[in-house]
Length: 128
Image (cartoon, rainbow, N blue to C red):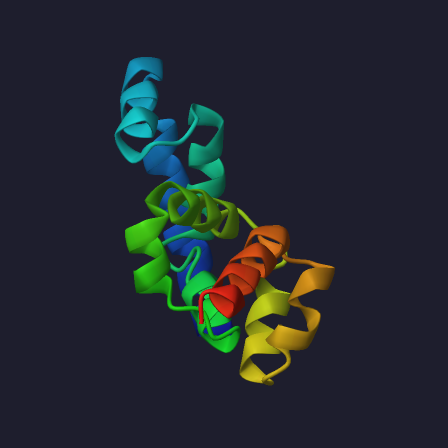
């Protein structure tokens, strides 16, 4: 990432956080309720930005899991996994592993969704 990109990213992050800080308690509660998260999760999601959670569908694809099919069958689970991914602190490592084709071998070391993904893989294998 070059300096210009880093500055633009910092500025966008600052603006998101400033917008969130400008909301009063009731507005934060309503926003959290609308998107189905706790109010404590809002700053985490705002800090990660619109790219938050984009690793999950890529990881699922690397694991030969059909995210759309699983979302259709297990909507609540996919929502929970997406939120977990959106707030994950290992996103950089995950993206690196995905880019290097190593995610399937290493995600269990750091992914907070690893257990659920492994269970889905087991269900996928048994339903074939």
